[in-house]
Image (cartoon, rainbow, N blue to C red; front, side, top):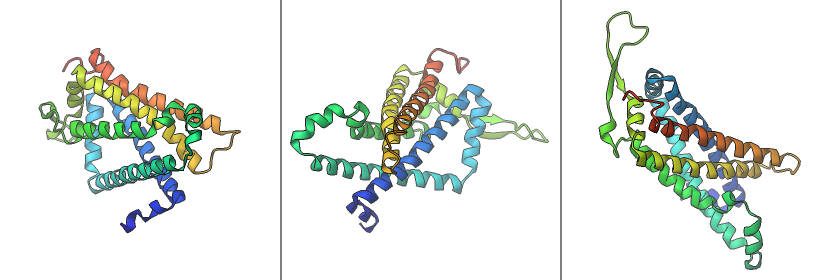
Length: 237
């Protein structure tokens, strides 16, 4: 229980929220950039996936950091939410509700929905338990091979295409990503506020940038299942 002793301090809790939130936001940006490699073709996406798996222990360190960040972020957010509810006088409830942004008011709920979406995403593309029939190995010859050596790697491109060719799966991802966008918008603003960057002469710019980044990420990610459904990507599979 000593590991979570920081929860006794609201200041430390907010700092942990900001740091873990920053780590998760950075991961979402990098993850989005990696997913967009699907537009550069099968070999590019599969090579990127093979590179990540070749990192070995480093990849597991990254995964552990992300998992710990997510756990701390969830636990701390719930604690702060209950603390916030308990601190608000009843007579100000309506006034505060009307002033708050939609993304802010629904932060705890979108966070729980994001968690469910992430679990499904991991079961689908990482652990490959929801649709194991989409898993295929790919046999290829490296560009720098000096002989006719044929190697085997995971065909991520085919798995993604086959997955998103299912309209129901694509719909789940599109809705899930939009929810991530709402959560991300307020999360970035909250992070800057927690770190003290909330002065009125430049915080509106931070708000616009966070909303802009959230919109860009949403558009980039939902464009993938939409492109596959329309046959613009992976049409030959």
